Image 1 (spheres, rainbow, N blue to C red):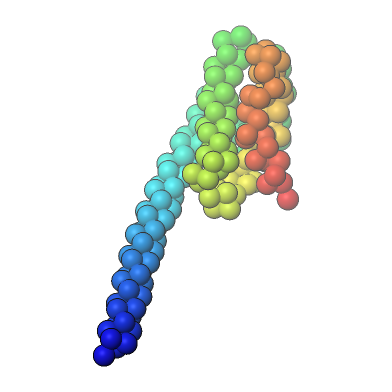
Image 2: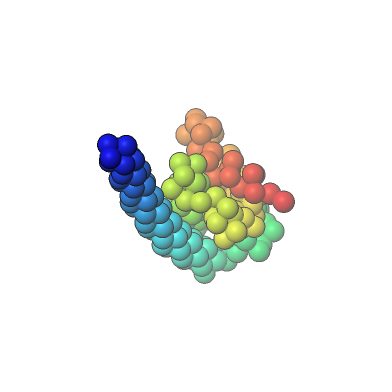
Length: 159
């Protein structure tokens, strides 16, 4: 009889342990799903914001950063100082947004493969066309780390 009670106790313990494991697994799955949904929402918002930056730059400065094969230096050659300043601000804002996305990827807050699917060709083209601006910002601020995460990400995404 004691042997049966011991076996029953062992089965009860195993059942309790399995219940805890399944409960923890369920909570983890729910957390992971919620995290992915929030990351997807964030990425959609960031991509929408990027679109607004692209539209603003094209509408106000006539430069389609993605499809125009002129780089920043070529676009600004001979520009008046006020026009140059507003374009610099707009490009800086765009690059900060891309840098922010790249930092979030680095820290696992955004899934890199999903971001790459959304933005690989855009990022590579923006980097190519804005490289003179990035270099001048680094020189002007004496800091080679400016936009480094974006540059590293875009270079990694090249075909």
